[in-house]
Amino acid sequence: MPNHLHLLISTKPNCNLSDLVRDIKTNASKWINEKRFVNGKFQWQNGFGAFTVSQSQLQKITNYIKNQEEHHKVKSFREEYIDFLKAYNIDFNTQYIFED
Image (cartoon, rainbow, N blue to C red; front, side, top):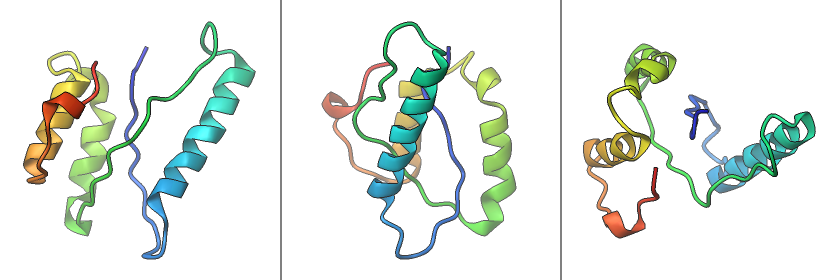
């Protein structure tokens, strides 16, 4: 079963991203639990990662998302996430990066 998801969305400049992600997680959890897609209660981990992309990169990012199943045959989610942080020059401490 997949352990994360990628969303490619466009938002208005005044969008509160934390509120948006909270609402997505809340509604998705409710739907997953109502449909009983998993044994037990489904819950999201704390936190999220968000990255901006330029208009010129939309097709590249779309293809990246479409190929997740193949991509994760060779790279874990943790490795992928750390690669994103490095690509965007975001300082991080591995102590605070979630486990696979």
